[in-house]
Length: 258
Image (cartoon, rainbow, N blue to C red; front, side, top):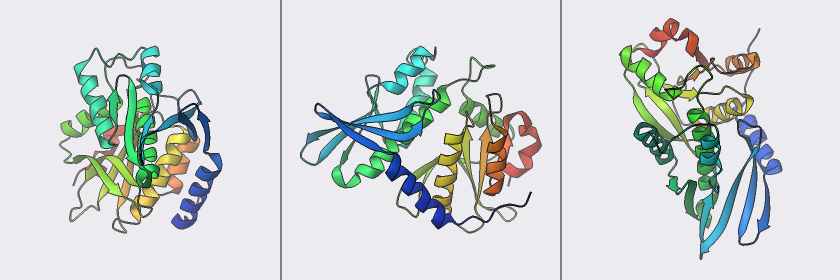
């Protein structure tokens, strides 16, 4: 199948239009309930609550939604120092704090769009990374990927942030440096390869790529132990994104090495 021609500017405009049309806000007492078009693994729309804390200062919170859902799924974060540290690492990437069981971020009015985006990305990433696959009960997928890279002596920088052309900041799990033989490679780890995660990844990559070198590449690790639609693979291919299925990771070691 011939790959489609992609217009990044048109893609971003369509994405922004979709966000504008799909986000809704209603007031509930002192809070504003923001319903986003992003969906969690239950196909429920993510909701964020905003409150004016003091003049021009806004507190945004998920009202403990993500942590409580993980607890109901049997994921004990508080009882594991390793998982607690991993959660803190995820939240630090997005400048989000944990207050009780709530994910919280504070912002001024001028930074509200970016901080709202940060909180929603943190919610999606924590929800995705901590939901274990059906066949695994002891590990978290991003830990498995890190262990694999270390064992194969792949050298990387971990948890790197880049500013896209839109001004939004995006987080990638790994950066593989440019070498004489290889271009710069950014890596995303996706535990649940669904349509929502696919759309988010494609948007952030196209926005990021415009501020990086023309030959920069994106590699995504997909956990195919979880249910995955075949169209996800075709979609990444159409956007010139390299895919490493977890079940086939041994075949792609050379792609990752310098």
